[in-house]
Image (cartoon, rainbow, N blue to C red; front, side):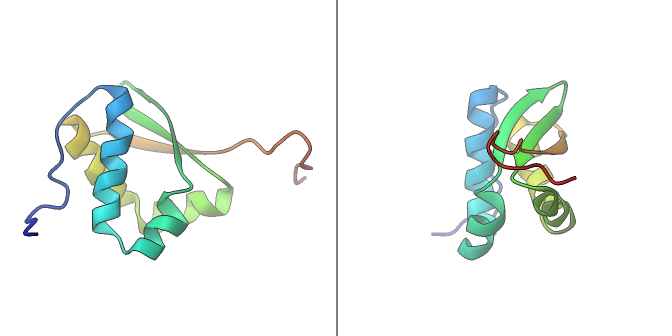
Length: 102
């Protein structure tokens, strides 16, 4: 299949549709192992005032994503929403029965 622009996804600013479009673009852009390891564990929290908040499983994951995939993520969000979107990463809360690192 000829796909000259892997980020050519439908522009739709409806929040419920944005994250699946971003994931589809990243799935096409990245090797499967990279997508499964680094992108699949992320979850979408909210899109407010052109800032998307993404939740990662831990701080190391945030660091890795920021260093290695942030450009692709920003591009996918821009294509999905039709405008430049900033991305903030947060760390998921640990389950109540799991001890917090101090």
